[in-house]
Image 1 (tube, rainbow, N blue to C red):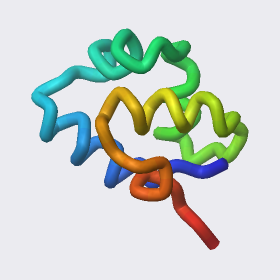
Image 2 (cartoon, helix red, strand yellow):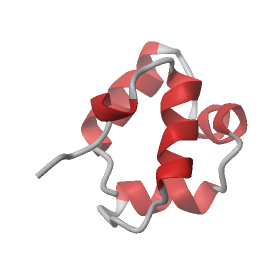
Image 3 (cartoon, rainbow, N blue to C red):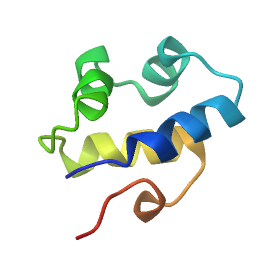
Length: 66
């Protein structure tokens, strides 16, 4: 699954969070965030779901759907 990095950082900024805040709130490994930043599509739906839940948005709002 590939996450829209620009949308993600916009949402993080909207919460006035740091990357560390997102990692802690979503209970994910920092590597997951850096994989998103690098444009990798190796994330599990569970990880994407945790990120979306922490940001209070639907999963499809942060996904890149081809």
